[in-house]
Length: 153
Length: 153
Length: 153
Length: 153
Image (tube, rainbow over all chains, first blue to last red; front, side, top):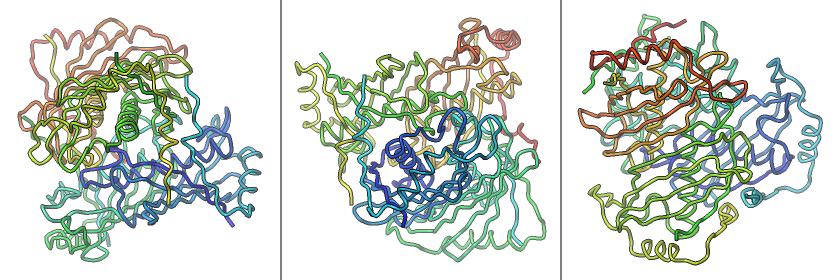
């Protein structure tokens, strides 16, 4: 069973377009924010530049839109990580507004050696942590990512 | 056989990210530009707000990335329109850089009555023109969209 | 003396460009997020669509860049509101990374009646609250904006 | 007298926001496109990465908004280059819709050695060409930038 991790976000004016709703490509910002939040907060790794040598490069993205999100809507973004191989990590996403699923999609990314721009196994520590999460009995982790930033000058 | 329509574009600095390549969500800008160019130049219709009553709303988007596009790359964006029903229009895209396919994907959009936010058949004129294009023997139209803007103050 | 309000943010991959730094126009996202956070969290008002009748429309934006922000940098964004008239509100911003000022700028916005698209005094409650903040002796409010989002399905 | 160079552009759906107009930060896309078009088409230089060693980094941006641009509006973007020193180049912009000025602003950029991230004189060829343009008697060059892209697979 795959672990669910929940992030919250809010629709900003720059996410919207002249139809008065979030622009279709704007949902990928919510996906990216959740992916970065998961890597940063849960795994303690920067994203998508993992370290000096290793980068994640997106090879696939996809979204289905069931309902429209509007300016000011509070979003719950659920992320499920899936290790497809030692080189490929997929994140599935679902976005909810007031309990209703409005969007689902995924991004798939390959670990590359940035110097040679060739695929390479991602660091062992990431693989291990994601496997642990996948086997976890705990059905849902709720992360208040934003609250954990905290540090300031 | 579906008609191919070709647009050209160039990768701008704001399309790229710190990986030195086009950001994965940035390709949707190229898709949108080609969609808008097709509707505007070939069909003579504004996009995605078709007229006072009818809007196109995106219900699905998807992209696969084979190679990376870089700053300054000249892109050929090929669009194939497919009328899935009288209410649903799909655009398939392929992007080429110097003859090599680097990205393929699609967006699917539903025609809605904007007042009631309910699906509605798209204007007959659009359906007819797209059908004509689909039956055309001419395998490829090359549009220099940018060149046709022309008008200025 | 004008009140300072501090927000935190983090540089995401989509904020950066092929120079490896935040794209110059990307800083306006940080400005907008702080503006929206101030209106939402401190004043309890949605932004920039204040209510059914009244919208804020930006008439001026400006930024000076002293140093570059990079992927993953934790930002402190300081906002100072200034009521220029009953119709015009200016926000001044300063952005810090690890104690160093890297960017300063402002946006100025006019309150309009959205139906007639004409300037109109902003709601009394907003004017009053901003005046109170301006006269406050408390030199700095630190808001953990993100932490206050909280609500989820 | 400074030379005027004119580009055309069109407002796309992703430039707009829920106010039904171009988002204030969206105008910087039009500025960037004109800057890139000027460097590429008039000077024959890629932008903002000029060559292997030299990059332009933006140190200042500013815009004033007189009227709102809407989806589908055809824009005339006028660019005036000003060489402030051998290291600093300023572009002033004016945007017109149907003969009416709707926006004016500028970006200022410094030439840097990308390896050391220190300011450095920009290539002599650029300085010379911009000086020539500045001394030109010809008051206006109209560039159909888009039309000149042309090349495709």
